[in-house]
Amino acid sequence: MEVDILIDRITDCLIDTRTGEEVETEYRMRETPIRPKDYKGWKFNWSITEKTGYDIYELFLKGDDMVQGRISLKIDGGVADVEIVETAPHNYSHKGIYAGVGAHLFAIACQISLDAGCDGVVAFTSKSDLVGYYMDKLNAVEIMPRRMVIFEDAAQILLEKYMRK
Image (cartoon, rainbow, N blue to C red; front, top):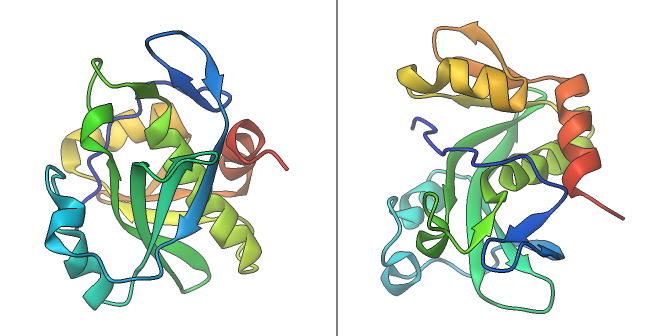
């Protein structure tokens, strides 16, 4: 699967685009299988990634159960290998309710990697036309054609921005 999420902004958390206010977030690993109604309006069929051994993490506003974005990953070969990243349909494009979702999802992957003893390193396969974009926005490095890695220094930047303790 190729990653094709746009990173609208690198923010200190999520920003409510209607008010400009920063909102606190939390994330959780999805415990129950995704049902068709859970991905209605989403670009990807999230049940497929579950069936291939990837864990799904969902981003929420603190104290709220509305999903703001999802990322599927598994620890493999000393990195967090990301299969799918997607902002919730209500956060798509410049008309989205919250800005910063895409980069926040990659920060979650960096945190999972760090917690698993992988130094925050994250790998993913980019759509070909977004390689330069991810190099610019996430400081990712292309290690093979379209194969991208967020190494420790770049991971630390995302972790400092999004993963407040």
